[in-house]
Image 1 (cartoon, rainbow, N blue to C red):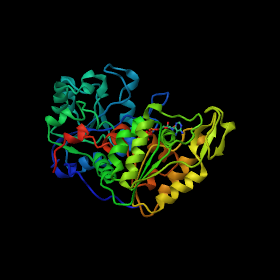
Image 2 (image 1 turned 90 degrees about the vertical axis):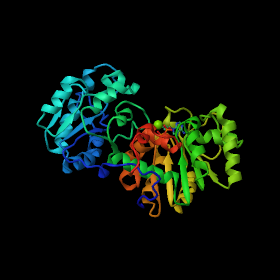
Image 3 (image 1 turned 180 degrees about the vertical axis):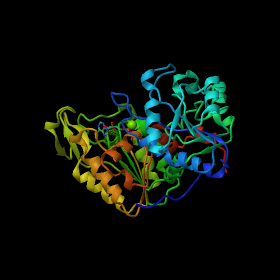
Image 4 (image 1 turned 180 degrees about the horizontal axis):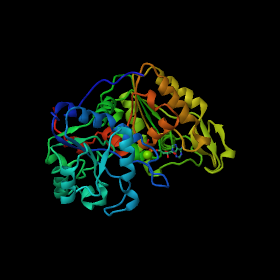
Length: 400
Ligand code: ADP
Ligand code: MG
């Protein structure tokens, strides 16, 4: 694994602001999974925010006010989605008391923030108010009125112009926390890569990834295409696809991509063998084949393809991986994705960046996430960034 280089953005971070005696409001991503008893099931997201919270506390801020959404309450109070279990876990991880408030705006909240003798305050679920996702200015202004500085450390919602992610930056000096700063720097490497640059694209649909393909294609030396979307490309090449999932209305688009790659001298690698079944829920029918015929449904790449893809990855300096190479959630069909993930973890010479929610889940599942240069925490946000779109919450933060 190689570290990260190449920064295209120069946004203000918490290191650029004087925090002494300031009240700092931080948009974090505490949208954690809860178990049946309502306790935090996986504290990874709370842990991930620790460096930013600790830094603010260690640099003289009078208060850290944390705010997040949790689940999808859709603008009304849902008791099972209150932030209390998060506050409990947060207090444990910080080793200090946390004042949890029962709302996020209003006079009571404002008074409670002023009166609190705790340095860490957690506001109630932002999405109990419909104004949050509407990006309501008055709501954002109320949130802003609680503090002197706004820090955005929630990458997963950076593609949404919500009140707490974007609009609030109109009313306070704004900067990025460490998590978002790393996301931006790391994902930027995939846009300004050191070459050779190999992009692995997989997942469910060509239509989900077409903008990513268009934006990255000319920057890459090689595109490796696996997952279900490979079959739309194989059809475009006139090859048999059996009963595998093909997006008929995207075949001509796939043809155009193949032709463009050919003109530009970009290599496109497609699977040369496949794990097939007669029905997705019949793993007992699985077998490998090079030719897809009749009722063959491809659920993973085959061993020849794994080697073929590995050979190409061998010399890469930068690798972006977006999209699993098979139905990795099913242990019967996970081998191809697992093999490629393990290989990426062992690639000594390359900076490996993973974008996309399912790809990140696969990296975690196969125990390689810690060995890669960067695994994005923002599924949709990472895809939009790779598509070349401006993320509103990032755009709202001024440059240095
Ligand atoms: P990401 O979230 O990383 O961007 P996607 O959402 O595009 O990835 O794709 C993930 C989904 O693609 C997974 O649910 C996986 O099961 C599915 N998938 C991968 N390969 C196949 C295949 N051959 N057939 C059907 N589904 C597949
Ligand atoms: Mg996905």
